[in-house]
Amino acid sequence: KAGVTQTPRYLIKTRGQQVTLSCSPISGHRSVSWYQQTPGQGLQFLFEYFSETQRNKGNFPGRFSGRQFSNSRSEMNVSTLELGDSALYLCASSMRLAGDPYEQYFGPGTRLTVT
Amino acid sequence: EDKVVQSPLSLVVHEGDTVTLNCSYEVTNFRSLLWYKQEKKAPTFLFMLTSSGIEKKSGRLSSILDKKELFSILNITATQTGDSAVYLCAVLTGGGNKLTFGTGTQLKVEL
Image (tube, rainbow over all chains, first blue to last red; front, side, top):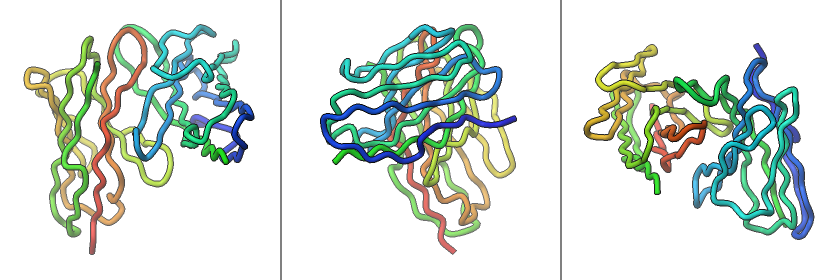
């Protein structure tokens, strides 16, 4: 079974631009969560989508948004990029949302550099 | 605010040593605790622990959860250089799949 895939793997953008990152979950998984990883703050939860609806949101500004499509693929968008948005953006997929907890598997990440 | 604390922050051992990594947590609506291994890429899933006192084992790695004292340990026996990585502890809370991560333990295994 293929793992979680993320595109692009690397991205360089300029301050003020916007960026869209993509995540395809493991086949059959319907929950997709996004995380930002930086050396200073570690791994921080951005938001989670299940059945095309945002179910949870972390403490990030409104410049960070996302969506999920009917095939469970998800995109996240960051508008008006700031230098501090430079990070590794990780996507995790899980089979279920509620009920008994289920493992979450991470994709390889997108390394975003803002100059 | 949910909090996950890992110790030590970093550790250097020699091949063959046994190591114990610690993770304590203060969260609301605990559902499970997960351990991940991260080399220079995405975190790789190791274990998910939901019940107290039941050890999970995979090869040289094992982990146990204490829900009364709010902590978990990850043991690695007969360490190898390939075990060098950051080990992340995360707690799943609430009604969704939100994970709160600790800062990680950087393990280096030397020859």
